[in-house]
Length: 324
Image (cartoon, rainbow, N blue to C red; front, side, top):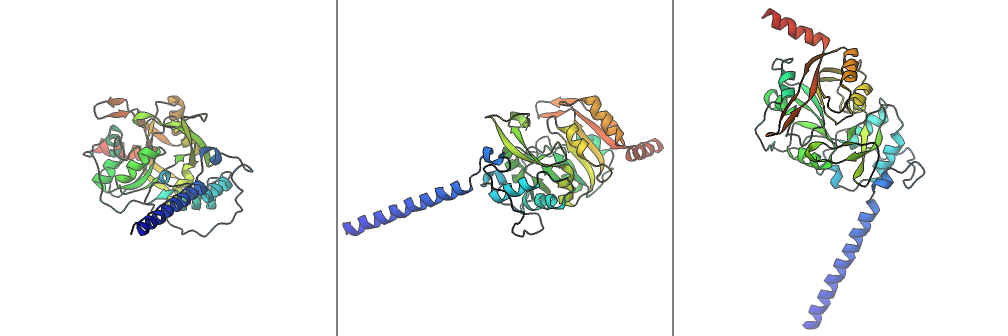
């Protein structure tokens, strides 16, 4: 009896050790650190040969946020192959759609607080007159709830949208809110091309792209705004909320406003040249309708934004107000 018991224990221990070794080997096989991700062509990452398995042309419904999964080397090779493509390149657009944009989770919304209307949303709402079923984009979406400029339109008027958040910790929380939106755990590129940039995590949602990589940063993938919108097949945006800690003007300069129709924008101005920001948007046919300067540390809520409205919409709303 003791001999059989001892044999069984040895067998179980052998299986456990073997299984552990296999698991470690699998992790090492798919592990890809920041140095590898940033490797130039001809470096540690093999060249992509231009061929890949056929992927379904739809938005993938990932069950786990991407930062919780091993980075697939095939995705990195494909990203490197497309990094020099123009923002309207069909392959780049398909790549974003197939590998990075996630559909809403099929569960009930799970919010932690009552929905409130931020000062940005309050100003923007004046130009839509309780419009139903609009479409928004929020870049710098944080956890999808706290200080959200778009959640009011979603809950009150049935809007849908696209939430972009680079910080992986906040993105996990965002996905858990189960909002009626597409989402993306990446950043919007400050240029017309996809790129890898160093991202610095900070408290209170102030994480940002920084000039140089360090031990406290990690590499993040960025895609042009236009490419993302084409991946969603959206060229008409009712409201664009842009709060990305200093990259606002650079991102706006990449947008072909003659191809992407954006009615109203709220753009944070704290970390950029305010006059250059206003001058650029006005050159694109927008009116600086409002300059917000508000903070409430109790909520907490910080609103240092310009509200930009397309000239024709601004005039139409003002004309209606004058006549009433």
